[in-house]
Image (cartoon, rainbow, N blue to C red; front, side, top):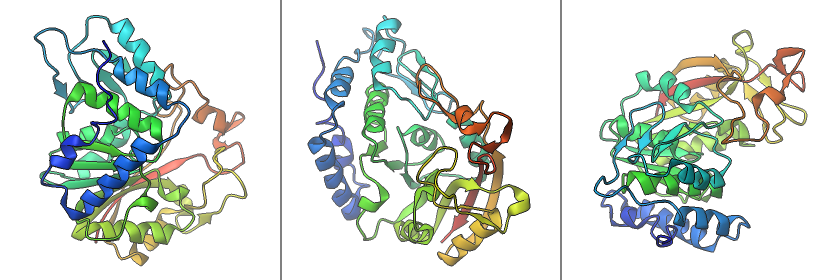
Length: 326
């Protein structure tokens, strides 16, 4: 028997949450409207998959362990093959990995590697967190494990919201939410988040300063930004790459700064105590095609004769993790 429509109840617990405040109440209304009025052609198929998710085995209830490379959500179901067939209908799974109801989802990104790079440098205990470009909410589960009291993620890609709803089916009403909005949809006002994450977003913004200033406006005074973005290798710290058309086959990469330039941008936007805590070149072990993400991935974006360069002849993707304060 299919369960009730999960889209209608997606944010019911957030609406009841005293943490939401006036700003989040407004954003929640925008998210509910966007979800209910969405006309994506695959929405009926995704909705059907969510409704086909099984209930927990008799007497077991749902359990979870967020503090794992693959957050473990739900006890193993009786028919793992059937569950796998349902979950793969929500392809492509990009951020992860996850274990849902006993099924391991081997996502395109080893997002746990990224989390391991930043987690030693932050403490989210008791914090309200905003995750911009959150994908399916993978990092939100890790943030809850680190002590965050509320995580609100925004991402306009609807399939990622569907994946979050699948995770939530197994995890229950934990305080990790994914809203079908982009940062440009967020209204002005006092959001007062303790920490804002922006990972893999800055280079997709045409105006980097506007993006950073908007993030600053969403933070309380003294709040923290965790920024992860493409950068040039260390010897090019004070340079900026403006791709002519594509970068690693991506159309919307507007600028790739060196770390020195990136620090200047952050300072210009009003941030202080700027620390570059990690710089790592992305490998084909960290980002790759899997059965859960069958499209081409990083390997097809690199020069086969020189994997240190993209197909366009630019330096291969390297990413920096930066922590700073308002």
